Image (cartoon, rainbow, N blue to C red; front, side, top):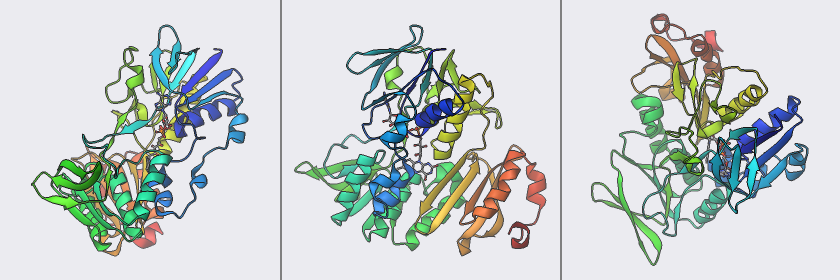
Length: 401
Ligand SMILES: Cc1cc2nc3c(=O)[nH]c(=O)nc-3n(C[C@H](O)[C@H](O)[C@H](O)COP(=O)(O)OP(=O)(O)OC[C@H]3O[C@@H](n4cnc5c(N)ncnc54)[C@H](O)[C@@H]3O)c2cc1C
């Protein structure tokens, strides 16, 4: 193997390249990314960058000087446009072809939009430029409507409220974050937002955005009501950035479909938000949009490129910060899982919960309970029987502290 090409120069692509070097791989390495900035971290975009508690530079993962040490052919600001798997080539926008012996796809996801998303005042949040544009808009004191109450939408709402703005969140599900965590935790998140003065319109979708003079003025809901808006943030989820690989022969249903080694075709791997792979720990295919997973999977993929042949079988980890609350979650949270409070009291703003599915503990969630949830994580790693866990009295603070 002479040349490894990594497409996507953010958390997952960068970590893959760095791990290859750290593990002693001295061959040619090409890192291609369509953003012209050096790689930066995305979680602060909806938190510290939006509220202005961090200067934008603080989100930078590596400076250009750090990247020099990679001794890589670094192609920032260049977009991969097509992939020829049998011919072992990536074609860049502009026509240049780059050959590879092994390829790592790390192109992440792109935000979903609505038909009238091009009105001024309508925002999405994926890049640092998106965050800076949204922050500038929020500084003008607009009435904000956030469309979508997943993690991104609820974090943006919290940041906008912290700036003292009038905020309404619209969500077709009956409660926020219902898909990842179910109705009960969704209710707790709804209460958290109401307590901080965020208005919630749950159980109703958005019919359309309206504007005047090319600028958004209101959001029309499915029940015919309208919400006046000077700034609209679309937080509707994302789609894997796989368009550039269409016609390549790779399976691209929900991301790049890989096996347990994160390999999609011989010598072609995928990593990070774009990768859909078979996780043997849970016996299911998954695609995660979690920062920690981007790093861990990249380390695993770099190892597999170098011959480790180790299935990637993590217990996924995710966190979100909203107001004064940090929610942390390990594992998976199927919609039909049973949930049990394992520690603390939701009404005290401090608890941990476990989720059981098919007779096993599959997920644990902490709400301002970092130590407790870290301890409970073991149950997911061990696939502890749910019956045993469910028969235990709620863990007392004496046990978990
Ligand atoms: C605002 C925000 C807040 C978040 N908060 C949290 C959080 O609190 N907790 C958490 O666990 N996770 C969070 N995440 C998710 C986390 O940031 C992602 O899981 C992580 O960034 C994934 O890294 P990645 O490298 O796979 O993808 P990305 O970071 O999306 O990087 C993909 C890169 O590939 C580039 N690219 C795409 N197509 C091409 C192409 N054709 N050619 C060249 N380059 C291309 C993209 O421009 C991008 O630079 C958040 C994400 C966002 C956007």
